[in-house]
Length: 141
Image (cartoon, rainbow, N blue to C red; front, side, top):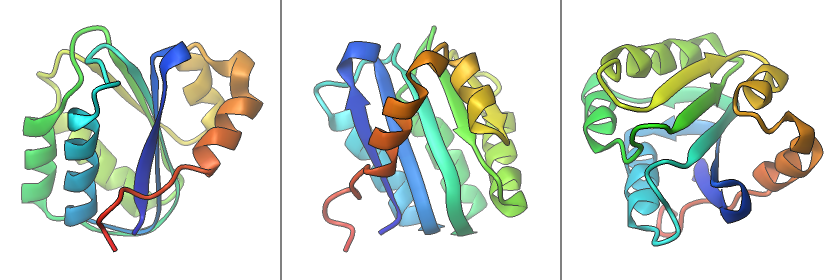
């Protein structure tokens, strides 16, 4: 298991986290679980903390499916934070294929830059505490 999310209703924010090796199955489970969550709204912002992802076992077809399943709509700002070059490359592929999506997606190398772009820098300590405790998506073990 290497991904999960928490929804912060007060901030209209999805806190996603990936760690270890991330696979097609886990990414698709993430987007489906988020889409099915009754608390989720299409205009929520997203912070995806991928700094602890060590490797990706993701196919190009999975990336295309992720673009097709994207639950975010107009007005949603999404920040992906990556430090690993391979993960950055996969994130860029997703960003390029998502170019027609109504949401705004940016990739960052530094968490502080992502928090600023999402307008949540003032809550950095609380947000990082919550995202670090994000549980894995049930049923992936």
